[in-house]
Image (cartoon, rainbow, N blue to C red; front, side):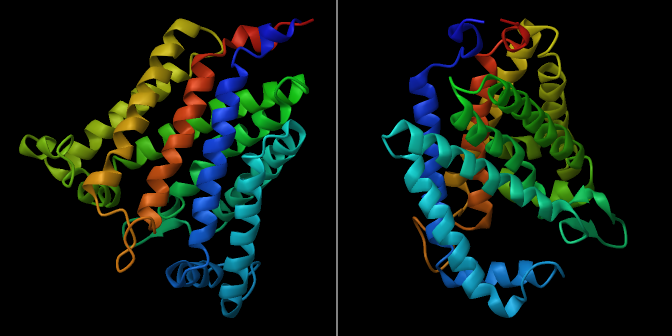
Length: 291
């Protein structure tokens, strides 16, 4: 197979993905040195028996922060080989976060909900598959065809994972209340509540996300249908990032550029947007075509 037939995404876009992923990892990594992130780390460690003790939260937070910043810096490096292996390191880093979905802490446990699949804080982790796929794509681009195919397919699965799972969550009362705080703060979404209840507005968003996922699902069979889904996903991620301006996404008592957990959750959509763009530019038939 000719190189251009597989690698339909150009080097400039992959370079931009590498730089943006690097910047976000540096940004998030530096946040881990601050007290509010150490507190979040302590709360996380306390919920998992197989993680270090909560008393080590400061050490763990700083260590993870150093690693994250280092990978981010290397992703921005001009030397191609260094950038490739930084992409692989980023893929491992983000994929490892998915391990936290194993067990009860990331799910809702109330009188109404009894855990999986009603996800709580783990929603941000669902985005890690798509982000890890970006890192793998950086590593494999134009040198490892099989891995690059795996990266693009993983990106497709990552988009579906987020849109289907979080879309289904919009039908639950706990999610409807949770997103209402975001939507009511935004002039782009608050008007919905003039016509809908909190639950109805959430269902509208959920149906939109599930409809987008349904279109994306056609990627291996009908590229033109899937393109509509990728465009819808790109629009969705652009819209969710507007919450950074309408909602106080910055950590209280710190302000810009000290971004809080909600803000970090939203920023990850920028990377999923780039993943949707990669899929938009990559026909599935090209990945399957043999030499």
